[in-house]
Length: 117
Length: 111
Image (cartoon, each protein chain N blue to C red):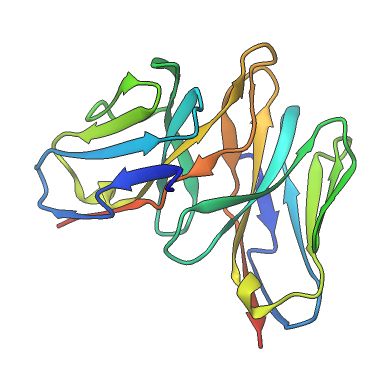
């Protein structure tokens, strides 16, 4: 059984288009994340949701909009795609510790390789 | 500022040798985690060490944490070709939900 799944695995699109990436986790976790990994393998947090509430919103262009319909799903919609958006996008989930405001082990999806032409 | 910077950036060793990777960070943390990423795949969690722990073992992995120096090391003993991957340290900051990943160490184990 796949713990964290993402669709699609590959996405090739033209500049200016709008696209979505979907993520689902079946681990019962309360927190989900979107990360962007660039060509140099640097992994940067974009967003995080805890029980459908946005808790991390990094400096990301507002063309990127996350949506969490329930705590098992976190989707990423990108408007007006640009060349610089080309990267691998990873979804992850974890169980957070609200009392200590900390996060434990994260479980990652297989990634979505986005190529903007 | 970037947290969790790994050293070295790349490491090439022979099978059977030990591999040591280091990580430095800047702020106080709740825990530090190490992840492995095989080429074209997602990250896989290896080990988590909490801020009140100094050393942890898991199979051929040994992690140390020195909070006074804000540094950690990952030792892989008796390396195998299958250990070839990128290794990332990640820190969970005190008082926040954010986990910050470093740029990673690329390990290549030659058979």
